[in-house]
Image (cartoon, rainbow, N blue to C red; front, side, top):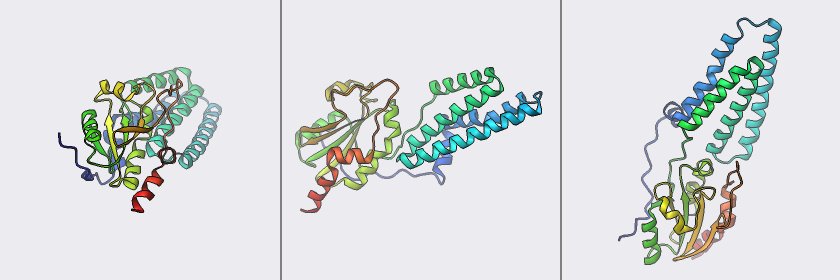
Length: 263
């Protein structure tokens, strides 16, 4: 079987305003926007018969919520390197403050929003970054053939991912952006979607629950390094914190690049 070409994939044609297009077409964003902005209509309807003192009290709580949300978003903007992670946290914080403000009006309104957010969580999922960078999309069989033949790069850094993993969605652009910087004739980047090939997870010693994404560096046909470790167990309600710096240090990508450039 012929190994897949390492030519850079043809970039997809992007819409003029990609973020606006995503918010208008992706159910995850659209449903959350509708739910959050519906608060203004719910507030108007609920506060018609309320006293002026209560309205002023509610306004103060709303201002406090907006200021607290702004501070949290500013902190996340500085710390978070991926837009997907920033948006996920921003929506989570906004929902929390919305529920808190609704409690001031009526606990039943808060319960209605909580039910709506649960429904949105069930019926939609945050979309991942859809770019490949300089990565090659592989099947498990193609990777096995490439490593066995050994006629391509010496090193292959493989990302094992699945769209059902929230950890991978949050960091989905990290690997693609790293590949644009570090991909060369000696080090190739590849991705395998274990969501499409779940039976292959055991071949790599990976659990689909808590160990996605997993990154494995192959030296010729031998596994050299992986992250996270094969014995790693995710804690409940936690996710892997994947960053470019972490992957660069763990797989010594700068050293591989220097070795290639020094030839």
